[in-house]
Length: 271
Image (cartoon, rainbow, N blue to C red; front, side, top):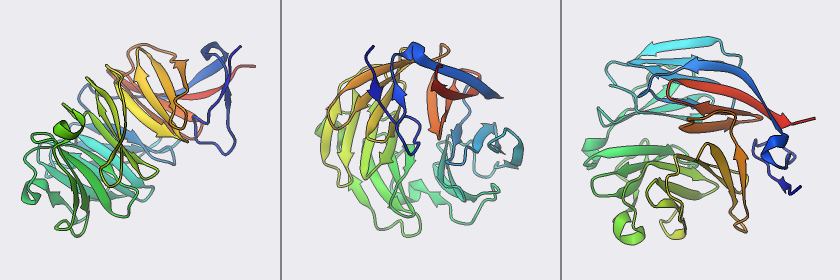
C-alpha cells in the first residue's frame, strides 16, 4: 500500500495518509446555506454564514452566537477571517470592503473600491501583511495589494492576462508569503509577493483550492488532489459525498460546501 505523510489538518505532528479507503469521515454537524450565499470558517472553528442581508456566526459546537443585518453594506459576496477578533466582508454589489469585530459589529473603516479606481472588483483575499488585502479588478485583470487604513499607497500587478495568460480569477489566496490564483479554465498560478510568477500548474475544472503545510489542495471530481509544492508529488483523497463545491480546513476538521449545505466532518485514520 502506497502511503504519504501529509499534514492536511494543520496538526503539530503529521498524519499518515494511505489510500483513501483507510480514512474515516465522521459527520459532526451541518448548516443550511442557500445557493448564492457566502460562508467561511476561522481558526477557532467559528462558522460564518450569510442569509440574504443577514450574517450569522456559529461557535465550534454549532451554537449561533451572533446575527447581524447589513442592508447598508449590500449583499455579502465573501467573508474573510483576518483573525479570531476581526472579520472582513466584501460586497460585489456595492463594491465595498468592510471590517467587523468578533461580535459582527460593523466599524467605521469601510472602503469604497470605486474611489480607489477599481472598475469592477471581483475577488478579495486577506494578506498575511498586517491590515492589507488583495483585490482583483476583473475587467482589466489587475491585482492590487491595498492597505486598509492608507489605501492611497498600494502594490499592483497589472496585465495578468498578458503576463500569465489568466482569463478569469475565480479565487485568490495568500499563504506563506506567496499568492495563489485559481483560473478554473487554465489552472493555478503561484506568485511571490512582488508579483513574479513562480509556477503555473495546468489543471482544468478545479472548483476550489487551499494551501496547507507546503501542499496545494485542489477540489476536483469529488476528490481532493494534493500537490507537494517542493517536489510536485501528487496524491488523491476521495470525499465522502458528491457535489462538493468548496472546502475549508480547521484543525482536524474539514468543512464541505454542497449546493444547499455546509457539512462539518472530523477525519481520522481507520482502525
